[in-house]
Image 1 (spheres, rainbow, N blue to C red):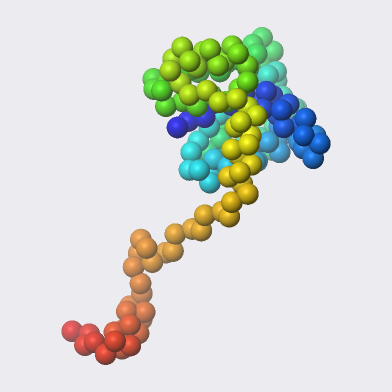
Image 2: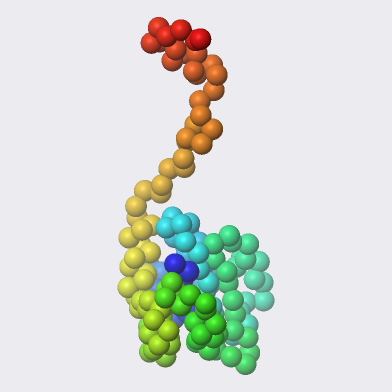
Length: 159
């Protein structure tokens, strides 16, 4: 399910926690990228305004797109537009504690989750051990020498 995140709504809730008060847009983006990679999903995070002058730390992620609403719109308006334009709104997850966005998600039957509850979910997932990558052999099989070793071990003829 694609996830639409109200960036500053989530960031402000996280920053209220004493240990996370210095978290910025780039740090949040890195955490969310890791989270989305673990759950094998993708998302978009939308921040108000034009953002920091140097946005290099906010791009280049495969599973998370970062947007800034610009000077004339707020993030809520951009997210509402994305919900409205979605061809599959029931597959969207909207992350915000803003009533306006909760109502927009409900109107299109998208899933809505409060920023605080979403952050708890992220934290729980990140505490888990990361999934191990698939072994090469799963897709490509074992090598010929490994096959020969197994055949010898079990006393099987190679023909």
